[in-house]
Each structure stands twice: as structure tokens, then as C-alpha cells.
Length: 635
Image (cartoon, rainbow, N blue to C red; front, top):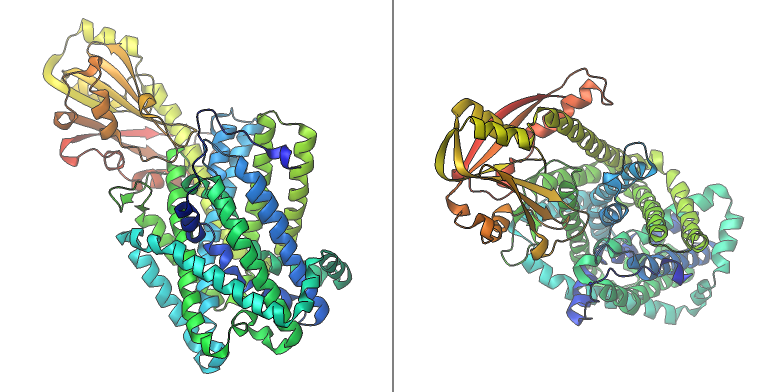
């Protein structure tokens, strides 16, 4: 089965050297979420099964162990990590591999774009719930020794989360440096606590036999079985980060981190919690904290809170990265991106994303109020995302020429498992599963609205653009006053004359001696090699088109690219620091045209377009060198 998805690494991509530092850092960034699921996963599954009787405990622990082995270990760590786009992973990388955004409308590839965007939107739902349930479950440890502190759990959780979102604008470089070591200690600690409990209660080891999981689900009845499956799935949340963060660390460090550290620690801890419940059913109130000696409860609460903050930080940083990728591929409007580390381009902060996540996370804490209640909201978005990833990965395997029967067998096996989890989590829809689905639906709807609205806008602008040959002929037949120096005009298209230039010439009758038509093009690769960054296309009459190509993992720094381009013979003598840059400020007008989008959605697109980050700021052009030209376009 492993050969089914043995995706070939693209030519020219060298396998990164295995570095201990990369493995250590991956423990904090990749495994923070799944590593803190021990705080609440088994507890909620046992509660869903009716309480800590021996059959339930053995069945739940067996189910969790085999879910980790199959879904996380086999599917993600061994198979899915091979489906890389030049070393990058995640939903956006899969969409880029399938070239769904360039597919003709109405084709199955075009429909994949909708599926992929829904998958990306589900990550935002996960991103809102993860910090809320993680920090809540950590601070609920205070109630183990001091039940009177229960009213303080929610206020303390809110305070921790507010502080976390406030420090985002400062950057996470310093905190990031301690992520790995802290999480390494965390995994060692929870593994040792579990091991001590297993030594005291060795009878729990029979749960390693999958018979106990199957037998329990069969005899429990559909209602209880689905409830237990939905709760047990909480122990798998965070697995998607292994694939999404592959580009940051490489496949081998992530695999080594899982098999050498994370997987043994998690399984020992879940076995330990199960063994404790077999010996003392009263520990079901919070089996994770009862594993620790009484004197260590409060230090463990502090340690768990720190670990959950790290898990939350990883989710927040992942949301920034996902949003930046979506903007580059044209799925979201331009938003303000701040680089918080001058030497590390991956360190970014996005104010809009940060405060929307903060609002959603704090709302989740205040609405649900406890990790048990949030358990009903958690899981459905992640299980759907896993199923989407399995389908897209299968299509990539087919595109790369793998045997269809083998692909269907391997991916079908995992898809069946994940659809069972989806069905189980669907039973929690009323208890809270609606919350992340509503968030994901809103994000997916905005993405599709922006994508469709941008297509309609470009169709209208294309009708208004003058052809290159016609424009050059007009300039040569009616020579305008030629100003010394150069000007650069930004355009959204790679052909035709931008409207800003046409209007400028028509009204002012002047033209710089040299004119650059600059277009930024997002490509379906993570990064573009420096030698392929730009392409120069002579137009005539002193006009040159400059096409910049940026990958979906890159920030489109046009100024830096233009400095390189001006070293070429065709542009020699042009100084990017001393020329004028013309941008168009487009005002979108919604019309009642029957073109596939309702008027109210066009109005929504117009509002999104109006509030998008100005192109000059987005592309890194100094404000003092910018001239804006207004234009109204009706769609």
C-alpha cells in the first residue's frame, strides 16, 4: 500500500539534510496541537461512552491508539507527506498541483477549486477552536485540587488568549526559539507519567489489540459508538499540521519527530490514563492531571498552559501563512502583511487575520465556557478537512501516473475511515459543531465571491483595454510630448495597454520617454528561482512590459525584482528609486447583468475590493513615488 502514494519529488529538489534543530523546532510548531489533545481527548471519549467501566476504557484506549497508528502514522507521516509541491504541502499546494484555478469553468477541475477552498476555509474554523479548547482544558486543571476556582477558569482563559493575540504584532521569533525545547520536555513528561501508570496497571496493555476497539464499537450500539468516535477523534486534531508545515522543516524531520518522540509519548500517556481509570474510576473527572502526583498538579497546570499557548501560536501563524498563500493565488483580497523579522521572510503578522481570529476564539470561549462543551464544536471541521486532503491527494497521484486501482485501494481505505469520523462528528452538530462550520462557510463564501467577482472585473477591464499594436500606432501617428526619464504603470493583465496609461495619455498628452508596464503573476509553485523572476517583453514606442512571477509562498516584492530587472540591457539607465509609479484606483459598480453572480454578491465584492490593501503598499512601492488614477468599472 505504501507504494501507492510514493510521490516523486520534483526534479531539481534536493532532499534536505536531516538536522536535529529542524526536528526539535518541528516538535513545537507541528505537534503542539496534537500534543495537547491528551488534556481532553480520552476524557471526553470515556464520558461519551457512559463512564469509566472496564469495557469502555479498554475500547476507547484501543480506538485512540489505532486511530493514531493508521490516520496519523500511516496516512500522514508515511503517505501524504510524499505529495509535495516542490517541497511544500497543504491544501493550497495540492490545489496548485492540480492547476484547479486555471481550469475552464464547468469542468471537474474547476469544481475541485470549490472543494479545495472549502478545505482551506475549514482550517480557519479549526484555528478558532484550537486555542479556545486547548487553553480552557489546561486551566481546568485548577479545579482538580481547588473546585472553588472553577469560576476563574473562563476569565483566566480570556486573559491568556488576549495576551497571546496582543503580542502577535511584536513577532514570534523569540518565543519560537523556545517552542521546540518546551514541547520536547512536554512530550517526555507526559510519556513518563503514562509509563509510570502503565507499570502500576499493566492490564491496560491489552488495549493495544484492535479487537477491543472493534468489539466495543459493535456492542455499544450506534448511538454510543458514534458519540465515542466523535470524541475520540479529538485526539487526532493537529495531524493536518504535519502536511501543512512540511515546507518549513522538510519531510524527514517531521517523520522523525513523530515516530521517535510524539507517537510514543502520546500512546504511553493514553495507555497511562486508561490504566489509571481501570484502577480508580473517580479519576474520570480529569484523568490527565490525576496521572501526576498531587504536589505536581499546579506546576502541571502552568506547564500545560504554556504548551497550549505554543499550540495556539502555531495555529495562528498557520492562519497567517494560509491567508498569504490564498492572496497570492487570487482567492482573497490583498491584506496588510507586516514582516516581524528582517532576516526571516516567514515571520509575518496580518492585523486583520489576527483580530478576526481573536474575535472568533474569544467568542468560542464565552459561548461554550468549558472544554467539554467545546468538544462538541471541535472535530467536524478537521475530519472534513482530512477527507478533502485524501481526495485531492488521490487525484494528484492519478495525475502523476500511479495505478488507479492501487490509488483507489489506499486512498479509499483512509477515506472510509475519515468519512466514518465525519459522520460521527456530525452527531455533534447541534451541541456546537455548527460553530466552526458557520465560520468555514463564511470564509469559503467570501473566497468564492472574491474569485468570481475578480473574474467579472477582469472581463470588463479587458473590454476597455486598448490593444498594444493599436496603442503604439496611435502614439507614433500622434506623437505626445515625451518627458525625460521613466515611468512604471502597474497592470493586472499580461496583455493589452492598461487603462491608467490610456487615460493619462488621452487627458495629458504627455508620455515618458521610457514606460514600464508591470504585472505581478502568481504561479502554482511555492517559490520562483531568481533567474525566472521576471520576463521582459518589448511593446514599442519606448514601452516595455515587465512580467514578475511570484510563488504562492512568497511576498510579491516588486521593488526588489525591478532592481534586478533594471540591470538588464533593455532597461539599463532606469533607476527604480527615481521613477514615478502609476496605479489605478478602481471603483467597482454592481449591476444587474445576468453573468452568474447576484447583485448583492457583486456589492459584497465591491466592498471587499474597496477595502483591500492598496496595491502600492502591497507591492512595496514607496508612497512618495506613487500617482493614482481613478476608474469606475461596472460589473
